[in-house]
Length: 495
Ligand SMILES: [Cu+2]
Image 1 (cartoon, rainbow, N blue to C red):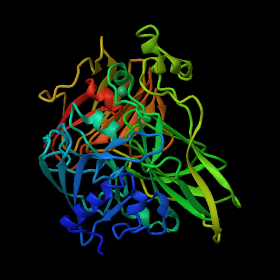
Image 2: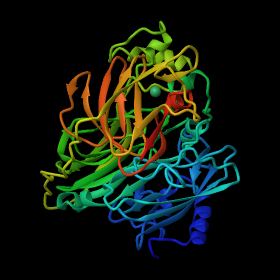
Image 3: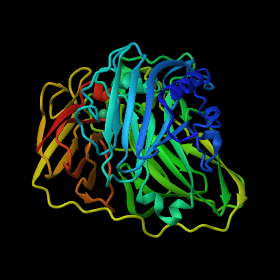
Image 4: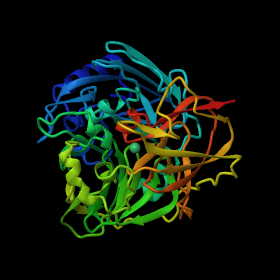
């Protein structure tokens, strides 16, 4: 069967899949998936572009799921959690028919893709009513970077509930990074990270929403503690996506460092060795793991991380330093927000199987273009207001207001200032940015990002250029509960 399925056959498969929801592995053995040597046990259902086109239907629906210790129902695309893995190349035409079988409005955001914010492309102002459909159509620019991107709902008012409920999927763009010989030689595995409410757990709102709701069940590709394999001497390329509403994933692999090769917006210039990797909601990274052990089983761990919510529980407005937040976890638990994880939790297991002639790491990756000097500097202050409101520059979100007007082609520097007591990962649509400095300390290496963590008391300076596409879009905190409570602004890019 070709990579592109006809609409009818795809829907038929989607229907069959919903009976075995969270059954990416099962579907993985069907013709829809080309496993390409990746471990089939955790390979999400996959659809590749063919002949320059990627076409599919995505049906957003409430589905019965079977996740050990997890909820009995989740929100899925085509009955799958995560949604189908989409793959395209620069220059491809993409057509996605979104069908809303949920009880509330929805839409789609193509997180990280550099495409138009208007029409039926990455237009977050589109509303798809329950029972209705919407035809998305866009073309990836011919020079679009290769990388790991993320599709998820973005209708203001329902986005946090729908993402927390399960919706989201991975959109891969293949290109130059994939052609680097050492990268190409690696086995590839997508890790879509999602926490879900525990059995009988609610998707409760209230105070939990203010802190940002986390689920107690940690899943990777919709599975609890799946197995990954690596041959001794081999390389494993992990494409990691934080698909959570609010949870930060702080990953470490026992006895194996990560070799970072790509951030949100694609390749960095040379691999960077990291003992652990912190991903805020919406953030992605690609790492290489070397099969440098002779054998055995190694746990991929999620380490505890305190998002600095404690100040909300103690005196309002008290400024917390990093590292002080852990004890506040009890307060958070008492507030019923779900779970603050206190100990490392295994989320996947790496098994050695076989051996190969040792593969080298790449020495160089791809150039990361330095941006020119900015023509303008702006300041965005992130804080909470009185009650359940989160603000940017003192204002809560209003879709009818234009908060920031910029000119197409301009380079600007933005100072992102966290004046509050909680972590806020700042996300900008359409154009990626480079972090210049954090509290005045220059960033050690250049990277394209579209999410950057701004900690309490921190000022992060980013530089961006508004390339190619005029139109209206948004920037916001990617703790989606905070976005819902107002921490979002509109950005108008004028030609
Ligand atoms: Cu936030």
